[in-house]
Length: 127
Image (cartoon, rainbow, N blue to C red):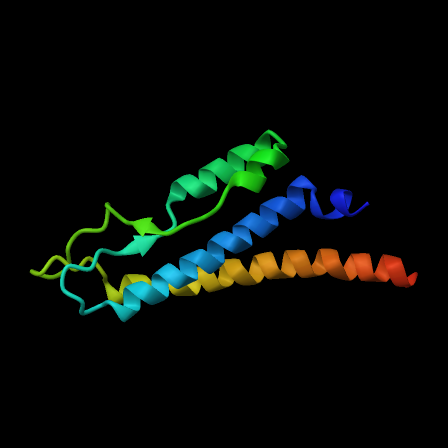
């Protein structure tokens, strides 16, 4: 029973997307904290994670979703912003943090809605 609820493609996709938001928030916070660290290279969750997750959803492949783990890596596309090689731009990081916060809220609402419907079904208070 719980496998059908928590092992569904939609639930797993939301969970993995939420995991990616959490990991990205850590990376963005680290970037801001290291704004003035000489040679620090910007970190982020690569777009490849999102494309792999999208492909797994398209194929309805829950086993692949179970193995996907978002992780922050050096953003090699970010140019050095200072002579010492630091590639963090505060404005870009703050915008990315706000976008990530909105995405995080969306995924939390989706998962919370699923849990609310489950609680309503269990309690017999379906409307």
